[in-house]
Length: 396
Image (cartoon, rainbow, N blue to C red; front, side):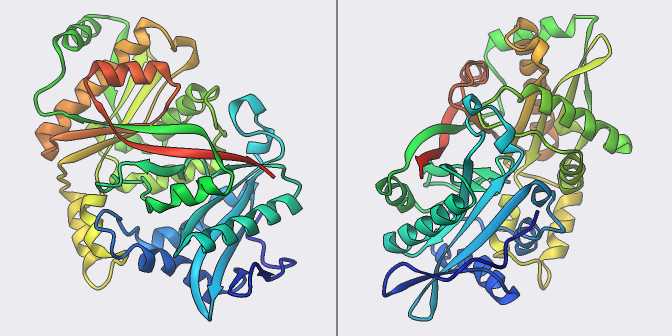
């Protein structure tokens, strides 16, 4: 699969707004650069590294394109670029059960940036038209690009910056999207918690009880065997999340790609694997908040930002840790053992984060709003909701 670059006509939505398919390198550059211009005055927007954005959108660098069809669009008004959107179909998502949120006939759009409501409507109209021409009859959006990237629109938490690998969007987008007939179908929640002083006494007792078990062992990731541990984690993830809403299995190539992408910000004491009778059954991954360092770089590693970033990667400190991924194999889910392992991994990583990285707070998520097990764990450690991302649905 690849980005579609032909057989897509220029769409004149009105006498003032023209939607054009991205077909040239110059247009791709305009697509990427627009986000930096439109969000420049938002103090909480974190400019992503442009090299990462181009890698996301380049078929040879992103294995998502091996099972997806993607079309990028630009909105132009009076010779100016005023908006952008992606329309895409994940062919693995089409094979998923409808009751899990995606399934046959479901396409997506994402990467939305627009100057105003009229431009937003024009872009969404173009994405809907293209998806319908591809045989889709339903849309789940925004999805930028995969469910494993940055799903959902930020609808709560605009008053602070996102942590590493999380999106941030204009507050106005919510009203503009909903006015176009899109209804909320799922909320993705992140939780914030102070970590300096530890957790409530009940959690401490649960952790100590687990430490007395001869069957249960927690270990750190071993970077000397990074490929082995990365595959262990991703295999647990594919199993643990397989019944979740919106789940799409990671391919072997995507698992390898994620490993390569995350390796520079993987620290052994911040990732735990739980083994039960010698078998890996759960994991928890925490990352120091890279956004805290890259925010001032404005998307560029030049002229000397690359050196600053390399230094930080070698000697990382961060007040914030994000837990992006956590999983327990399906056979143990909803058991007391699953909760115990979760609390143990959280506590062990908390200790390391405070002692070795200067962390004072953690962020867990995102978590599906109907994931009762994870919501209960978040409540038990007295964390509070700080951001909500909404996914919308519309029939076309």
